Length: 427
Image (cartoon, rainbow, N blue to C red; front, side, top):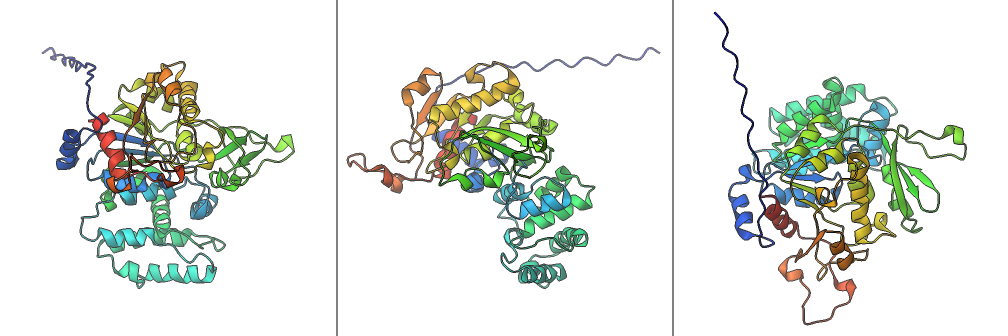
C-alpha cells in the first residue's frame, strides 16, 4: 500500500499588536504576582551584581525570566579558577542562580549559605583548613544542609579538591564557585551541564546561561591611548585618573599590553551560544539593565549573533542606566551611552532601525542622581521614548515643593518600582 504522506503543518499566524498603557500598569503587575509561573519572559543582558536584588524580587512576579551572563570576569576567586582549569568565569553565574533560587523550598536557605561562604581571605593555611573541614562534612555550614543534598554538593566539592593543584590559591575562594567547578570537571568540562545541574538543585525561578562558550578576556581601550586587559581592571583602576573608555574587544590571554608590537594579542571573535540566541528570540522584553556600563552591559553585545537576534525579535527593548557614579560612563552623556548600545548591535546586525534595537530609556530624574547628563530633547529626537517615572520607594521621594541639591537624590533604584515598568512593557 502507498504510505500516507505526512501533512505539512500549517504555520501559526502572527500579528503585531500595540496598545497604550499607563506606566506602570497595576493590573498587569498584580496579574504577574498572582501567577508568576505564567509571567512574561523578561530578558536581561547583565552579569554584574547590580541587578542581584532586582533578581530576588523578580521571581515573585515571573518564573520565566532569562539572564544571559558573559563569562569574562577576571577578578577574585574566578581568576584563580580560570587560570588553573582553563574554563569560563562562574562567579556571576553563581550570583544570579542564588538570587533566583527558591527560598521557600525546605533546606534551600542552608544551601544558599553554603554557596555564599568564602574561605579566609588573608591566610592560605586557614583557607585550606576550612576546605578540609567542609569536605569532611563537619563544618557547620556543611552539616546544616540536609541529606541527600549535602552528599551531592560535597561530591562536587571533592571532585574539585581531588584535581586542585598544590599551588592553588584558596584565599577568598567562594565555596559556590568551587562546587560549580567540581561539577564542571565531573561532567567532561561542560559548563552548560554544570550550570543546569546547579540550577536544578537550587530550584532557580528563571533561566541562567552563559551567553557564549568562549574562554576570553576583555581588553579596554582608553581615550589617552592606553590599554588594559581584564574585567577586574576596568573603571575601578581608573577611578582617580578619569580616562574615558572608547572601545572593547576580546583577547585570549590575561596579560597586560606591552610596548613591543610583536607581543600584541590579536582581537578574538566569538559566537553567541545557540540556545542563548533562541532565548533572545522568545523574549517578551529585552533589557539592557543597570550595571557597570562597559564591563557588565556593552560586553554582552560583543559575541557575533547577539545583535542579529536582538534586531530580529519584535518586542519592547529598554535601557535602564545606572544611578549614582559609574567610572565606566565617564565622559559620556546618557544619549551617547544609548548610541553605543545601538552602534554595537548594528556592528553585528547591519544598519537596523533604532527602534529595532532600543525603544525606551527608563529614568527617574526627580528622585535619582545620574552621573551623566540626561538630554531629554536629544533623546526624543532620536526616536527613543524617555520613561521618566518614580523609581524609588515612596518614603525616598523628594518633596516636590522643596528645592533639594543633587546630593540629596538617591543612588539606588527600588527593584520593585523598576520591575513594575518592565512587567508592564513585557506582559
